[in-house]
Every structure is written in C-alpha cells, then in structure tokens.
Length: 113
Length: 115
Image (cartoon, rainbow over all chains, first blue to last red; front, side, top):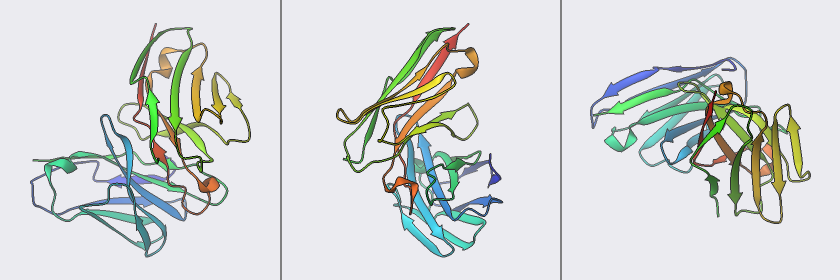
C-alpha cells in the first residue's frame, strides 16, 4: 500500500461522539486525500491537503474536519458522529505534479451506532 | 457536470472471456482518466490510465478505449481470469495530475470471473 498506514483499521462508536482517523505516509508525497466509500456511490472525496497546514474541502465535507501539521500525517475528524457517517474511509497520497497517480491506504471501517 | 457514470454495476464473465466496463463523463475539462482495481478488504490500486490525446492504451491484458467526441471511455480485460475478480472504478480529473488532481470516481463494477 505504497507506505501508507491508517489507524484504527476498525472502529465502532456511538452517535454524537467525536472520532479521529489517522493517515500516515512514509513517501514524502505532498498531496493527501480522504475519501469515503459507500455502496452505490463509489469513492467520494471528503477533504484534501496540498501541503502542511494547507487543506480544502471535497465533495462531501459536511460534518468532517481535517488537519495536517506534518507532511506525513493527515487526520480526519468527525466532530459528532452520525449513523450516516458509517462507511469505509480511505486515505490516498500523490506526488501531484505531472503524475496523476493516487496511492490508497488499506482503509478504516467505521460503524456509528 | 462533475459526474462520472459507470456501467454495468456487476458483471459475470467466463474464464477466457472479455470483460467490458464503460464510463461516461460530461465535463470536457477532464484530461486524465484512470481505472482502479480493488480487491475485498484492500484499498483501490491504479490499474491503467489514459489521457485524451490518445484513443487507446494497452497494458498486458488490459486496454482502455477512449472516445473524446462521445465523452466515453471503457476498460477491456482480455482473456479474463478468476484472479481478475474485483471491483473496478473508473475516474476522471482535470489539471493533468497537477495542482490537486481531485479524482471523480464512478460508482464501481463488481466483476466475477467464473472458472
């Protein structure tokens, strides 16, 4: 998985609790992304980062926030988890310039009860 | 305008047959069209990608056909094998993989190759 780890890999939480997912890369790639994968929707971009402390919203950003204080780490926070946020979350990285390849992590399966 | 429509949702092919998955897009600014392969419990992995300056790209048994005027592109898997059984996603982005390369994904096709 191209030097990308995600933690935790599985999590069960209750509605209304905050949740933070971590993505860690060892590739020193500039760009990092958070996607969610749901049946019938494919993968949808939540937030992305184009450098340390530089982030922007994706297609489905409501209810999510991100932070990137170091090149290698990109955190996704669900401020107050809802059942609609039950999903599989994937982190991806890319070098960006001239190469469109995104490399995906192994995913985090989140269940919000 | 940002959507990428993918079909079929699922596909069953006999070993040795040809698997064909189709995608259509609307945004003419898209200039990069990758296909990703995903096995159960794993993240998607880039399989093959094409840019709109060519109509076809082949890598081994995998071929992308691109029709710019129709705004369609397709993945052909020749001599399909049971090991090809996976979910396939088409995607599109603009900016030639430059500044942000935000990918718009299709909804996926679950391919089952029967022995």
